[in-house]
Image (cartoon, rainbow over all chains, first blue to last red; front, side, top):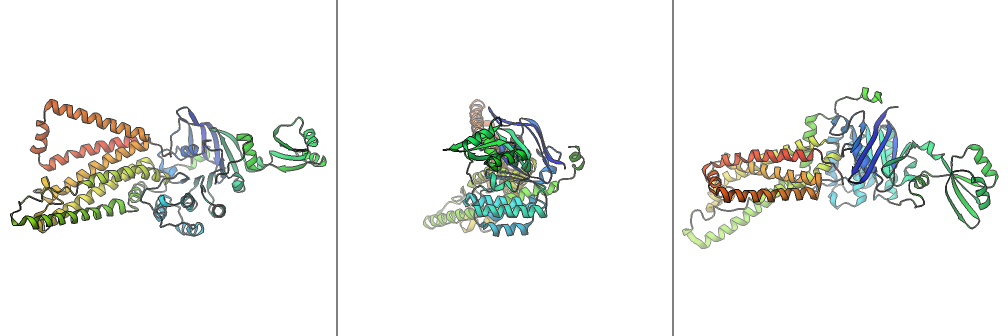
Length: 295
Length: 253
């Protein structure tokens, strides 16, 4: 495996705000990597830096081994779709789709036409008159159909309903299987996208909080539910990430349970469930606040 | 890490000339606001002006002065319109082109090329309409719409060059204003209008000091073609300033 993105000590400051604060990471070629984090955590800034749309305050990022800033060798191989993408005032949907093949050499117009059908995008409508979801769908279509070696999708389905989101996941995976590439996907809907991701980067207040394979992460925490006394007895001396109780029933989330631990917990009458990616990330980046329900 | 460096260094997937041409096409994807609408508006204003001329000459009778309809200003709005087109192209077009994996350099060269092509189109178009105007005896009413006032006696080449140069001047100024906005948002515009105000004050000061003489001499003593040729270095300066501002502009927000 080779790294398609390498960041070393990458920082971007806006005045006093450290939007991205000395992050170092690698994203491997062929990976579908989730870039997760709360609003304002630095996801979009990070993606802007990776695609040369913004300039680092310090540190460096390399894409396909090169500095992406003003570098057509790197840029013609990548496609960055962001939620806030702006379009020329006079553009209708079809103008965007007519321009895309010129800028993205692997663009598949047949696939794009099919996706337009799937998402039901009114391509003859002015972009500025489209709903947020329709604009997102245009971006998603370009992102999937461009088949760029490196595809970055920033909140690609903001405003899309659940059905459209599932079309998005299906089509993205389907096309990824036929034409493997590297995908970096930032999203709030962690559990929804979790099955898609093989790697997760969690950014919190400009720093990388978690950088791990999705598989490894899933096993890192479990929730135990049972009688309060049993739960307390079991978790004594362990790292407890969260605990709740209602009457005599308690639940506790603990890190790193081994096979033996699970067996012991089950035998003492506790129900053991793995913690979902979303819960895990919420606990690591925001404490008790519930997951953001932005769609 | 080294493995990536070894396999990298392939050429860009799209050759440089094509990348710049793509930006030209990006601006013309919907030709309506930049290429079609201005002509429609222009012809409409022309029709309206012609109607007024017709009414006046009907009531004035044969005694009307020969140069009564020589000072129409119905074309002048075009330059301001084009400046606004240039500002918009810079603002939304820049972020769109970068979102479509262009470099800033390609974007700027393509945008300048687009405006240069447009300047040729509008220069030739207005020049040809001026020819028609002369061939039809001023639209049958001795009127001058496309070559009014100081353009009245100029040959086709000078009329076309005049519009070409004027178009470049205003779009390059628009491009620079747009670049200032893209780079520094509202602060960029404060900077622009601040600089403009200072320049005007300096100009008035200089005029009061040196008198109108040299300025008037420049405009009256030189043929129109020379005066217009002097706008080219000014346009170039705006173009270079625009690039200096845009080359470090982020595509945020």
